[in-house]
Image (tube, rainbow, N blue to C red; front, side, top):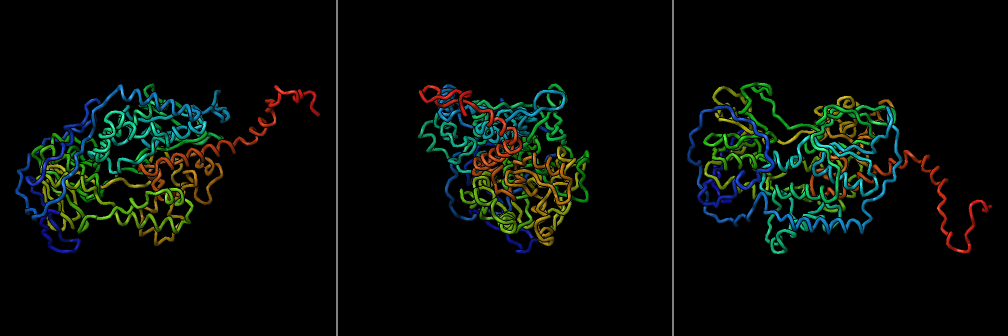
Length: 562
């Protein structure tokens, strides 16, 4: 790497400072310059702060030439006519696969009259819409698919995700569920041809968002935007859900609930705890951010921004601040960046299909090891920051305190105190069902991995121990000793988000395993709906009397049969 490392010590209490010299690099696209404006992201105003004066880089790059960064773009140009033709082809392909599949599930009466839903899916981002598509392909059509966000802002792609391109290779599939004309490659080639596909390095973030919307429209998924799940309770054999939408609150009943609420759907953004920082401190507003917050980066121009963390989102936010004209100092507790993405190794069919069948000790060993190794930021993202002279990275420096005041933010590290105009926590998301309001009535009853591993291991891997312990169809399970009605209610709730990872692998959040995960979920729900109504299906079997030989001389009318 073309850098000089000022290595003071290998001890975590001392720092390694890496500073970039911008002129050696060609500038990558700015964070906002190529972003479409038809999907505005709500922004938080930055408080009026005194600008910081930039300082010279702390070290010069060593003389070493790195390969160029391939071209990257948030979004490519759109060809509406080409996409319309592709949608027509995709619908024809689906028709050849007997789409739409006729509903076979039996209607369930709900209180007050009418029929309950078979499935309510909360969250219409990538996982939620793919789950709905998979359910409909299994002949389960009595569903509702809701999302509290406006169209185009489901999931992170048009909101808090700030990378230029996806982390995943461009060839991966998932939302298409095996239909070639619904794949991203088909979507891209329809507009830019085979040569355009060959030249593409990775998928643009906003291309991916628009592709998902195109799949949703082409398939005809019944998304209801602006509708939020507030809470859930059990009522007999059904779940009673309280929703809030454009018309106010409503009560709905469903046999199954799929929670596809995104990366934080099993917890919340991870906010570090510091002695001098309160979440509700008015001095923190506009000065202290999490990477999942709406941030007005233009307001950071000419300011000095501190970023905590060295994961992908931390570098993404650092890059956006730099591209807006800020100076950025980024910090990490580790003495060096993680180098190998161990989770990438898991992206093969054997792991995706077989992981859930391993015993608890094996599953725990796999993922506690992967979590402990941590995921390095993509190299393109690191280079995006390195391209700026105002960027420095201080390794081996943890933050001991964060104190906002009227003039900015004071950060205390083992090396002393530093001042910033604003700070951003690039600390990811925590898994803790206590943070999920919709599950509040059940959270103390939900089984977690802490109950399935030795206590000393649970203490050593506290976050992993908080992951819910799911059944084979992503269903929640009750802790031992819970009332039967609670256990039955939890079995009707399926967690299809990052919180399922320790039980199933990365099948509900990352693109490589999404197709397998959605099919597994849909198959489990189809199986449950049939078995719950097995007696009624038996009666339907007895009543089935469609004659096969009516048009032959061997036909025997029903009244003449012995």
